[in-house]
Image (cartoon, rainbow, N blue to C red):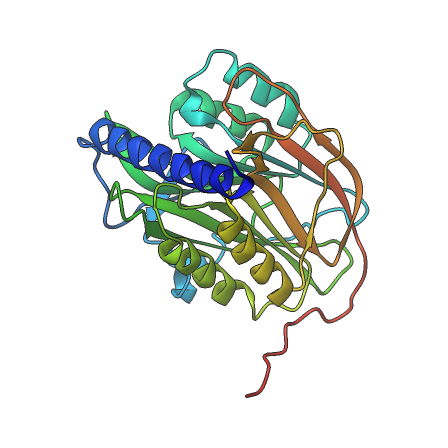
Length: 308
């Protein structure tokens, strides 16, 4: 078989795998319910939580419930990111407690919104925002950001996967940095997976870009990007260039890969990585990653649009 035939075979095999997985997921989630309103859930130092639409174009919905009077330590901003596979595997809660308890900001994807998880967050990161994608067997699933201080703003967005008809969600929050006039904006994304083309995938990240491009300070964009082929990777690279983001690299090969490509990422700007770690676990189909950042200063990091 020639090199060109091998390439075509691999491409065809990948597409077939996506089709088969899409059909399987459609059957599995045929009884899922997609909430239309008040899918955004917020908690602030309490086991009680509130619900709202939480849309990113709704200024009132983004306002903090309390006036944030504390800020993140500019010399030590610890971020933990993990797709937790809906807590399906044993040992998930124990690993989450062990690996994330010292983090300032925790970003989780495929979160099953259940009591054990809420109890863990309440003990270590008592402020959290969850954006529900769908409900399956009575349990909501989506994306969550938890933190040790209350966000200044919070909002969420969702994009429906065209094949299985269920949304993928994102959460965007912002935080004070102690001693600085700048705020840190953090976006946690679970990207569209089951689609043969890239149009919906591109639209999801274009919406995120529009929500972030007006921010003139430090920025973190992280999560499960599902960028398992070259076309998806190009979309992420273009977004990173537009927002002046650097990609956090990991040299030990511990990050989870699909079809040979790492899909869990932390992109950043206005920050300096101090330490970074990828953890090998058996409690999810993804390995968690973490980083400690140092805030690098007050420079203006706003993206100036190009003139035609």
